[in-house]
Image (cartoon, rainbow, N blue to C red; front, side, top):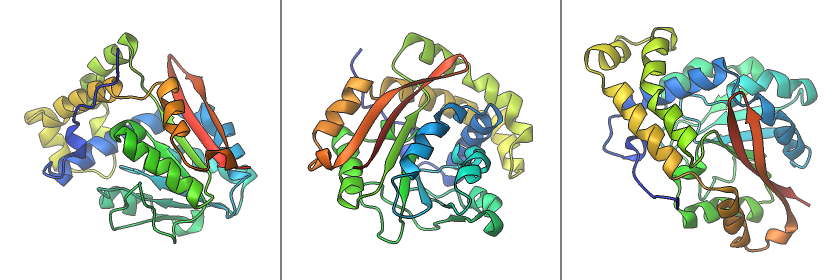
Length: 256
């Protein structure tokens, strides 16, 4: 099946911010509680070894993102590592909850365009569950900006265009129902729009299925890399990592 450029509610500027926040909070909670991205730690460490500064700028952080679960392990090898959470639609309640000066976790309050990163956001760039949101030309722009600024970049997707992935997404409303009482920051609105007016489970279901249908395959990721100018100045790696019953698709690039 070819990639479909469908729409997700999360991407729409008209979609209420508080509902978007409930969805990204759920994704952060689920990925961190299941340690979904632990298998990709060696890839992050490899990229950081080629970074000019001990800093990770996380793009499309949502409610804080999977990066939060990986910070303790990353600090064992990179004790001076700093982190900045960013998003095009910043989830400020979640960002403020996870902001920790002692762990050097900061956040950007204003929207960040992943195609053109502000110059003050240095170091390695990470994109968790973000690349599939971008059209091919925008994905090329993300990699091109990383090459132009000599910044390592790591892309991770936890779904793929497959029947198994779509079936897993069909079960996502149940996960929302079971986990909602434990998600922070606590919100009565989250309970209201999950159980009494079930908008959150339904939009998570739709966005999850669409995410699978528009996830780039490894071959398509390589095609994106091939469109980047001066790409030969970087080392590029793509592949799959097993994580529990699923897989993580990755793209890693760093300066030679």
